[in-house]
Length: 340
Image (cartoon, rainbow, N blue to C red; front, top):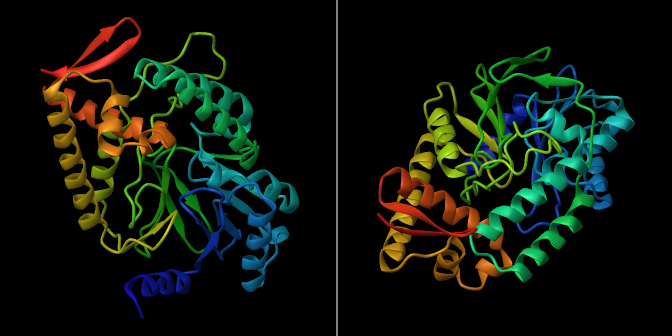
């Protein structure tokens, strides 16, 4: 038995079962987790698609359950592969829906939030050099993806640091922003298991996407908010997770469980240091926009995955700026980065 299989078996013996649900995205299947307890709980739902719903129903049936048996749905964060089916599942089962209190307005006002998110992304892309035709194409893709998500009423808002009590276990609610502003993990200290969603993934580094802050209101009329430093935020969250005690297994939102979170987080820190140094060397040759840096690093991928690669570059530039290695130069609305 492999280490991953042993971890999943240990989780199953603790009443936590991984249900891998298909998504239309490059990341592949999303792991939802059925907790056989009172209330019967599902952590994350999968995207809003007939294929995902069919597979979820079959996975539940293999455990002797139906959608209608669910009593509590927990949303780990705002990405559509994790919350898309929440409304349908809640409507069919009558289950309560729990999510971080700061996330609740976004879940309940999905379309309005997506409109504001797209406007925010458009501003970030424009000032960091992504051409207009590429921005237009990316926003069209974002519009097409909206059908995979949807609004749901959050009936149990969860405060960071609070406890989510089930009959046989208590889950500590921990806010770990970075990959998204709303990333939430759930720690079963007694069983030494963390439901980690996309905060820490074994086979890929969770990209700290630049996202509109949760604190920014919906259509508040105050203009786009200031760009958050997503990678710096994520690194602070990783440090908090690295310091956690009573953790043997982190059940990830994609792929295999993490069985040594300290070693994996240290590896991620080294990865970010290496990438920041590579970007520092590029900037040392000539002032560049974040989009130009992304093209130097990834070529055509910087076009097809422009927002993801832009987020990656800006995250590392933020680290370099904080260390005094680079400075920001503005040419009208366009931002370039130069050696300090």
